[in-house]
Amino acid sequence: MLKILIIFLLYQTFALIVSIDHKVYAQAPIKTQWFKEIKKNQYEVDRATFNTHLSNIDQFSHQVAIVPHFKEGKPIGFKVIKIEDQSFLLALGFKSGDIVKSINRVKLGSIAQAFEVANLLKTAKTLIFKIEREEKVLQLKYIMK
Image 1 (cartoon, one colour):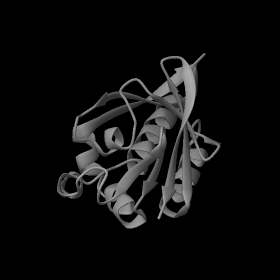
Image 2 (tube, rainbow, N blue to C red; image 1 turned 30 degrees about the horizontal axis):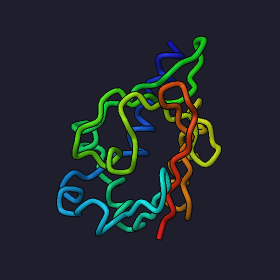
Image 3 (cartoon, rainbow, N blue to C red; image 1 turned 120 degrees about the vertical axis):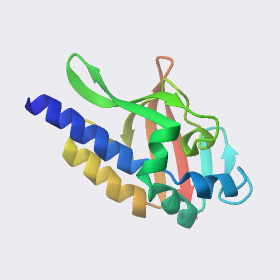
Image 4 (cartoon, rainbow, N blue to C red; image 1 turned 180 degrees about the vertical axis):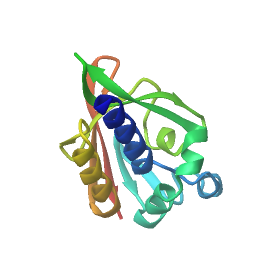
């Protein structure tokens, strides 16, 4: 029962961490107003707009499906299993099948770690997501302006 509660809390926490506001996204053209790709897997992002996207969890559930991911029975991150074409995460380089393993070197395997990451997302000048994609580990880097 405790394991189920932990999984649920991890899922809910991560959903809060990466929640988006569909209306704001629809009004902001990709690559012109709120972010731009500097080089492969590295982006410059407007902090105010990014934080606005983080403020509405309701819209997130309509655009992205994320579930806890386990290895040998232990949570090691979250897997993006569905991502819509107009999703905030897709615009920032995420793809279906990605497993988010850490953010700024904080692993996503416990509630405490997820809460630590939630605070980082709101204030960090740089965010580095370590993800596994098609059995390869890569980083997505976001520089907040």
